[in-house]
Length: 168
Image 1 (cartoon, rainbow, N blue to C red):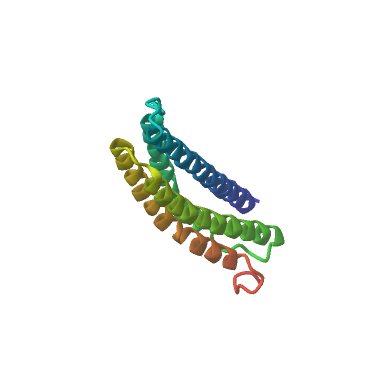
Image 2: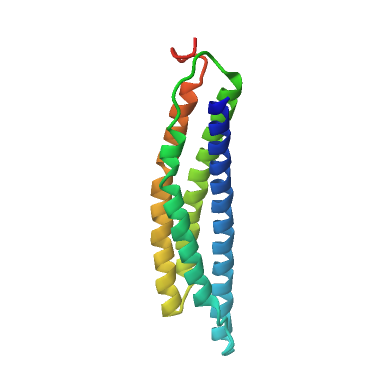
């Protein structure tokens, strides 16, 4: 029972991280559209613009950095399990879900990296361009850190699979 609770907790943690990474991509797309709007306003001679754009980029970068620190713990959290006595189909199902969510997390962070590069290419003002460059670096680090999570989850799934010698 204790192993099932730990598996459920790990599944919830990875699911929340995957959903959060999708939200980060959405925010980055918003920044891309805002940058395009600022550029077109400058071309048409409108001085207005978006006064909070750089500040929003800085806040986003801080949030991304915090998420990066949380993501560093994921591979260890996923691979901390040990085989149990006998086969448990519920544990196998949760471990399978952990693997699916971790794979989704890894893929969504790769998309985030590409979206960050696209946003960087659309931003024209120098201060915002520097912030966007840092965001690209942070997104690249996130993508690299997330590559180990599906592998750790697959090892966990194999622990609870029926063919494992520890689960007769």
